Image 1 (spheres, helix red, strand yellow):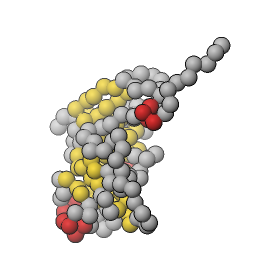
Image 2 (cartoon, rainbow, N blue to C red):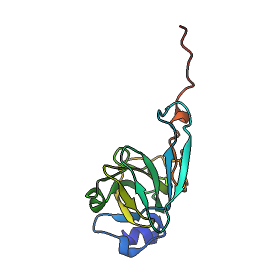
Image 3 (cartoon, helix red, strand yellow):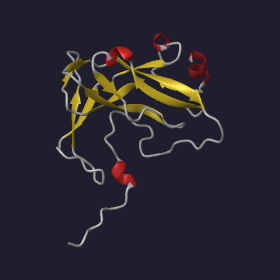
Length: 172
């Protein structure tokens, strides 16, 4: 992994060789969290959000709340397929990290948005090692990612509404 980061097949910034594991690279939690501010989210429209900064004293995540966090590191590759999972030690604290969308696109380069959901109140800290990224070799031709989240910095709320057709009015 260190060789691939050195020769450019993987881009991890900032890169720290101490975060390299036998099968993955540990990523850290960035300092910004976002929550949605409405009770019912709408997949066809942008949803209002509120942003928080995690201070050095940490921030307590509450159950039944979805928090969008981000990796401190910008991670990407034009060669390998990245997959991001929560670290097992964080899972043992009852925090779900990136359960529904762990696969990244070849060609994406940026900070990853993390979907954080605790089962109990849990204090998290900026720069804590929260996840791990593994990289797999792709087979066949590759179309590099050039979508709406490219070069993301900080947590990105869902932009699913950009991909769907406008709502249609139904005659009553």
